[in-house]
Length: 579
Image 1: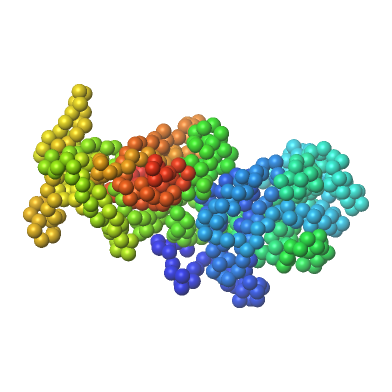
Image 2: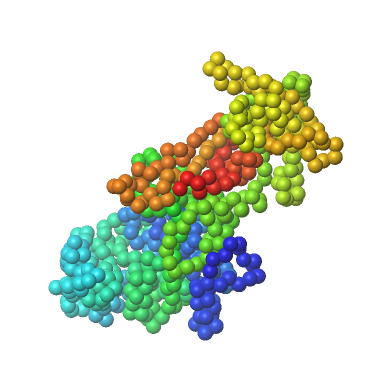
């Protein structure tokens, strides 16, 4: 279902996943719903994960169930504690709390016992083929695979070899435990997939206990079953893996073999083993982005961005620093709905959700990014006044803030034109313009430097009210924002934009790569001025800088005495006419 606006909390959401859950509950298959979010801690979460997080946690909340956060730590060579901390922080930032924090490594002993059970049943064997040979013998989409010469080892020999694998007798990758399924299957995932590999790497949780580690499909399916997950919600790339997921669960049959869970029960971890149902949905992928962990890592390591939390990065750490809000991401996910077909979405959907969210909530402030001095010649040099302007034009409950006013002001340079183009409605020599909340000014004269650049405007101020208010007589078309030169606070203003110049930087046309499409104007740092009420912002506080865009106080660099603001999104989509 796709919707343009979020549904009310009282309106049941309708999509194929929720309907499947309702059907399962109505049929009495489950007493309660349990989901999980199972990221691998080998990188930072990105915008694509926001949908999976919102769906798994959101559905559990809707149906009064539970959602676990489970770290799939089965490949310790690529995992890092920093990634774990960031994952947990991201989930909390989005507003979710897990019922239980789990790790796949919590179940290593149970997974090993399950593998031995498969061997005893004749459903798994130890293979001596090299990884390269296994790939070569696997066949193709049009040709069946070839059976390994070690496929028919007897149970005793397989158990002996597997136990010796666990004891660390063999070199890395010299032997593999494989499921015995069907080398002629149309589904490549069922052609005797690997269940365990030898990898003598120290694990962050289990240390050097294990020289062998379970493969993802085996560990993931049984971890779901161990935790009593009722619905395993995952993206479409796992659809072809579902037969293997079901095969592992059915062949091991944890519910019928509770002895396999004895080590876990003895450790005091509560269990409700069951049979989960995997349901797939389309992944979230926007144009003007790359989401490959390998490519994102290259951007960071090659210094093309300023780290994983660079506001141009699609990581949750990055978009958070850019000023995206949890409510905007949830609004985006709800607007897109849940489908069964992957597609490259227009990033304007994401940006539009942020605009709509911040338009309703972000207080207004004035900031001048490219300053040009304006002198009001008919006001005393020592004049200081105070205006009271609304914090939000559509929300009176947000109240007012004090805005200082003085003889000298800063305005944005683009709001003045000595020779105005057709249709220009801002300030010109001899022309009038309205100052936001502060009356009307007429530009009488300009001051230039030796290079004939305009450096100062000499203007006359008229404090009379705006048209439409009784007593006003002047008709003025344009309105500009301003900051008192005497009271304005110098600020660093970072103008962030899309990281790539083309919608599909991965297309590879004309031999170009995503690196060839980097937007060299994606980050510009300017020195401007903000009104005092903006400078007092706390880190991660968002504003609309009037007539300019939505900005956020940087979560790390901002300080009231040295403000730093990042542009989250412009007021309008300026890319629509470019591409």
